[in-house]
Image (cartoon, rainbow, N blue to C red):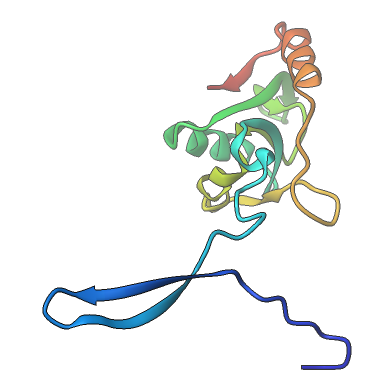
Length: 150
């Protein structure tokens, strides 16, 4: 180990292995419960997160999330696009490149395995959860717009 590196001992439970015909054979040490081995509450509690997607793949990702029974929210708005020979009414994402998902972080692999998903949005570390009040306010205020949610 390098200078200043410290080894931290792991607590060990000692058990004696006995066999009826032979008596005590050996004492075996097994790692005991470690402090901090439980997952933090953020990993177990379902929260709203933002998923970054490949360009123009938001609807495809929302469909895959629906297939995997992951609650999601993709607000869409109607837009009329004009070409020389025709007009088309399209539903485009209100936040291009992003889809909102409601899940516990321990289940994030179900989302990250989707081919067009880039990452869960964070700021240089783990994904950052959105406040539930803000998500609910956004969902209520966007009821006039169409959305793809499950």
